[in-house]
Length: 212
Image 1 (tube, rainbow, N blue to C red):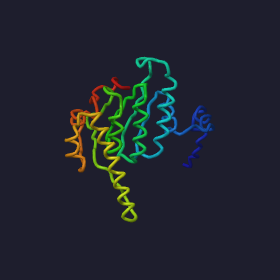
Image 2 (image 1 turned 60 degrees about the vertical axis):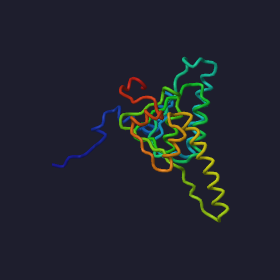
Image 3 (image 1 turned 90 degrees about the horizontal axis):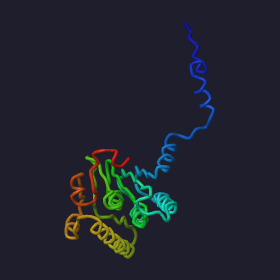
Image 4 (image 1 turned 30 degrees about the vertical axis):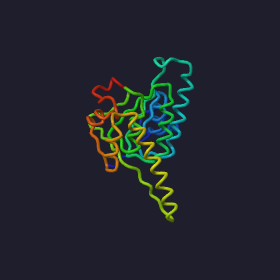
């Protein structure tokens, strides 16, 4: 029996009408929905595109200008990242720390390197991890090439950046300068209970209603 596959017959009229419209893809729809709810979802390596979200935090602060803190709609940063470019995350941290609107940071599977710095930049008391979230703290890499002078210049600059990271971590966690100096040269892996103990985050999520 020869069956004619006529999709116009099989599809309801409503679906046929929708197919005529150029709808945005689901990822774009998700992005705009999150923006409407003041959510930033960072699920990739950190690079210069992070500045777009710095501008978003500034925009939301402008919308809240003049409101007391308890009347502002919190900003939520959802993190799942292997890390990435240090200058990009440091600028993002600058903006977070200047935000008068509370900023919640929520780490999903991983908050490694620069991603971990993003996690601990959130408002104190509002930095969250899940039961199996892991974090990584480690020294930076200069990746320098060229003559000796250029390599030394890069090394000196990296040392200054590493001091900036150390000062930031010590100021915003329970990690002492002595403990940091002892561990940062290696890959310092942390499970969720260690993340809480060392003060990189404040709470392990046990109920989604707490934050969403």
